[in-house]
Length: 398
Ligand SMILES: Cc1cc2nc3c(=O)[nH]c(=O)nc-3n(C[C@H](O)[C@H](O)[C@H](O)COP(=O)(O)OP(=O)(O)OC[C@H]3O[C@@H](n4cnc5c(N)ncnc54)[C@H](O)[C@@H]3O)c2cc1C
Ligand code: HEM
Image (cartoon, rainbow, N blue to C red; front, side):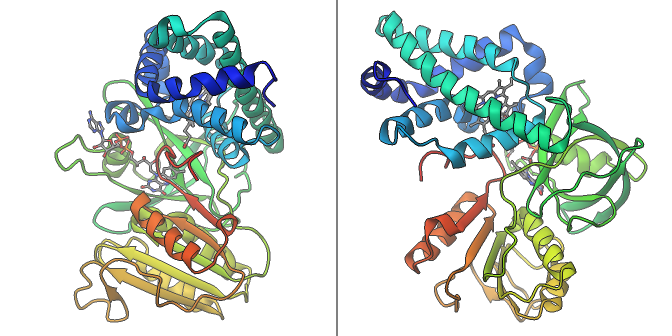
């Protein structure tokens, strides 16, 4: 909870901080990476930094958090903090690194806002930062403790024991521990981080959802190579697609992620588009393995049936469930998928049972459309869960 003295100061300065957040974020990262170049090379996603749009996630979330503190001083922004803490735990972030981020973030705020940052203003924003940082540190400590590891000790060598081309652009890799440890349990919907060494020596990290059920031998991920279309091709996905071979060893973090299938018997809606099918496949595989009888509505949208990674597997999993229905949309269905509809996914005509819980994964415009359809059909916002395959710029804006 924000102290009484700081509430009016944060309220008065939030608009200035909010409108300067782009400049603050730029300067913050410049300062951070000048002082610690190894963080950009080996920890932060340099694609996110380069494409400009998404680098505001960290600094922007502090301003969003301040706004939530002012609106609901007694509540913590749990959804937002949970998502960030899982991402941090999957990267092995440790509590001492918060002091480094604090130093450069506060220096950037002071430099961008200039004289407006009186000692009183600096104190109030310091308080916001540490409220958020301490909440994150506590959540991350709990995640590490639950896995039985020391803070930040999440990286494991894993061997690729199988590689399958799932579509022209997507490849699945099955990973098994390359040391004497066993696979850590996870919940369907969770992801791992994978770190690879690129040709210039940088060790870049990206997240990949687990695409098969827990309890299978090894961990399976499915990676779609990102084609730049005028911009550079995606670094890590293209590298994995071109280079990851059976027998190679990758550096993989322990599973994390707050999108996880809840264990109850109510009806489900599982909606995905494109490579967003991966966490949904893990959920379907888990439901099929558990012999689940709950009603499941499955929605998937893709460009063509050939682009639909794991298409046959998804059809088979839905068929294996006694009360599941699959609705497919392809922008270009061709004649390979007579069961599918043409065009973009549209839930308005679907028969949706009462009391459903929804899990969505795909590009943000797809999820925004599906979420909008669900809200207008009376599905409560708290029953709609989603995963964004990038920094979540929805955080704090719902
Ligand atoms: C929780 C989570 C789960 C995920 N699960 C999966 C999954 O199951 N399967 C999957 O395939 N992906 C998944 N992703 C996405 C994955 O983590 C990567 O983001 C994806 O593979 C792209 O990474 P990359 O290194 O190939 O691209 P990057 O190199 O990071 O590039 C990303 C984008 O930035 C653009 N870019 C790069 N440099 C510049 C520049 N200089 N100027 C302008 N634009 C630029 C690129 O063109 C590209 O469009 C997931 C992400 C998250 C957060
Ligand atoms: C209060 C302090 C912090 C806040 C508010 C914060 C916030 C965030 C947010 C919002 C994201 C994006 C989450 C998502 O949507 O996926 C993120 C990701 C990340 N954070 Fe933090 N963070 C903090 C501290 C730290 C620290 C101390 C480090 C370590 C140096 C760190 C490293 C990272 C990295 C590497 C990512 C992944 C982003 C990328 O690779 O581009 N963060 N953080």
